Length: 207
Ligand SMILES: [Zn+2]
Image 1 (cartoon, rainbow, N blue to C red):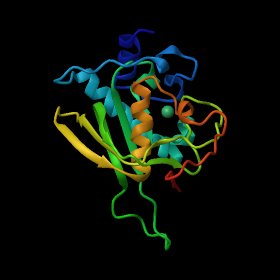
Image 2: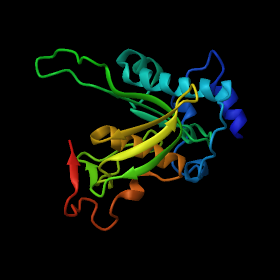
Image 3: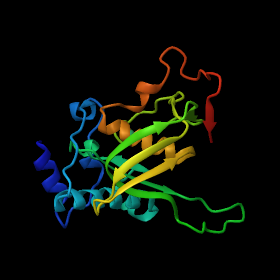
Image 4: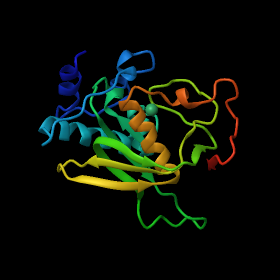
């Protein structure tokens, strides 16, 4: 499918993104460097971003996820929909506290980012202690995915306004995973091939 075919299907009012819209490893679109989106944003690109965010919300809602057959996700990049554009959505829920009280803020990050770019990063590396998964990868891949511990990211929001944010911890990892997708990089590219659980000095493991 061409970009326009995939995008015009997905942005239809009646369409909700599900697992059938998500391409899997082996598809060359996942290895391409995606195109920047034009500013001011087109309605088509704004709607696409909103559909991507709605997918993440559905995927985290137990009832919707069951009904639609969705794997839970905290991030999605347009190339995963076979749309080679620099658009990502991230939605990281906060968890309830030890007493079971709901968090003050539902999400620690909720953002649709257009043309996101890492403009600086820490010297320190970090990895999720439990490794990473991907909606485009239907198999477990074990090992530490070595990333920057902290990043500064610039992006445009759906109103075309420029933002510059600093990220650390889990949010930093999620955004780096999604930005990798718009550069044709898969998470397992960053696992040490010979020693997947090698811990270099200074590596921060995130629970
Ligand atoms: Zn992924």
